[in-house]
Amino acid sequence: MLGIAAAVLFFVAFLINAADIATNDTFSSTNVMLIGLTALALHLAGVGSGRSAHSGGRRRLWSRS
Image (cartoon, rainbow, N blue to C red; front, side, top):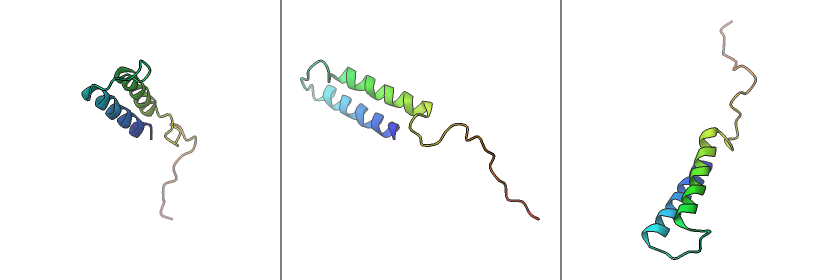
């Protein structure tokens, strides 16, 4: 989910930069891009994925008996 949010933020930053939209300093294209990079870094780190990196248990393999 954070990967999708990062993609949307990158697109918004691109639109602000390409259209040369005058924004205040808070929502400049650089700041929006940095928020997108933060969301992308959190996505790659596994935050918000819904699954933990170590589940603590073993997967059961189907065995023939």
